[in-house]
Image 1 (tube, helix red, strand yellow):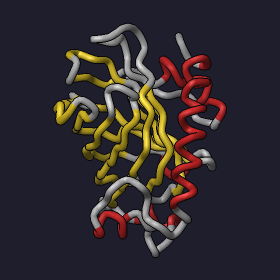
Image 2 (cartoon, rainbow, N blue to C red):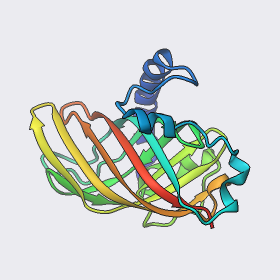
Image 3 (cartoon, rainbow, N blue to C red):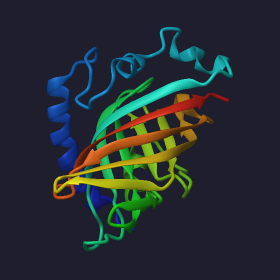
Length: 210
């Protein structure tokens, strides 16, 4: 499995993204990724307090916005895998990191692939272990709180030579820390530059703390 050497490249991308990201936002400001006013408001932690998240069966709206770097594995035009990493904001998480993996079906379509193929060691270093093979994306905070996502078919649309827009349905299958045992469904939308692998994504999901 290709893990650390791929992540070394990712670290450079994350470091660059962190510099850009944190220089443009503070804890109370909106992220670079474009979000609607209501969505930006929802990024603020629930005023009732995180300790109350599990006290109701009512679904909670979860939102995350990320600046990402895809690092293809294999040769074009149809790569073997599309692993990537990112930095951004998550509701109840604050500033967080994202690790993803997709397997191309066509140049514009992909499906989720095990995130541990490339990032198992790096997630373990953050305290995130025992990740099921159906998990294709993990969002994790510095405090070790994490969400596990299973991706449906990811469909892309070529908008221009330097922009592909995409969307996919997501299933939240588990988590760690404050998200242990969480379930839910949602959607990821975003775009990336096929020439550089740089892009942005947004997840909106309804989650239930069981």
